Image (tube, rainbow, N blue to C red; front, top):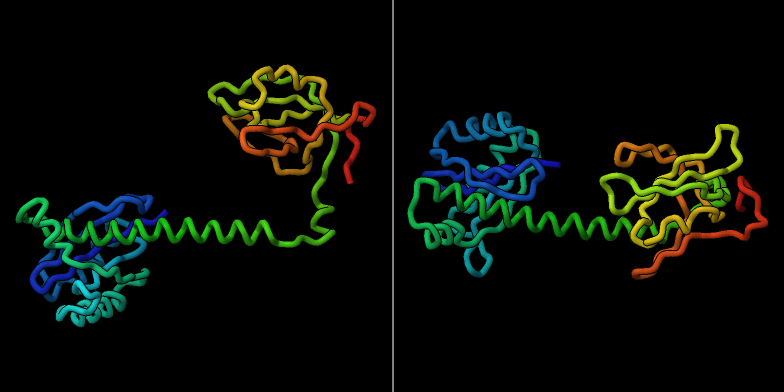
Length: 253
């Protein structure tokens, strides 16, 4: 999670906006005079508000070309980067101040509101960038080959489901008691399969494949010590059952 500072740079006044802690929404916050103390004020404001990144509006005309003030913005960005060691980005903006004035009229916070538009535009684009990055990473992970040694690290065993009960406060989780013929007795395993089994008691007595060497995981205040294997297509789900003659605790290979 990152908190961002947005800046609408003007020759006389500089609008300041701030995002929420999750970096999703931008809010107008302040207007600073553009004088010799400007950089120091922004650095202090960033420190006070634990800002992790700064976004400055890059002044462009309707053709996307630099306005006359843009060289001063680039110079300001350079001065700011020398004074504070956090990422600083430029976000192209076009008529943000005029947009605010048209909507709200002239106010003392006009420049801050313009800064919030600049920052919100950046945050919206950043959200899309992160979503696309996640999709690429997931696709790469899905296509990544693993070695035989990697596969051997996964322990798959047959377990017999002894009891099933809903988990209070959850419409997805079922609490299973599963016998693997281990010295410690049956394991408690939580699984998000409740909506696929209206009669969850029908699972009792089934012999199913489980991953048994996962780190314990806390869910809804309960510990889960394994994961059931299942296949999911559309609205349908099937658990990986094995024939009854296969003994509990048998390893799959």
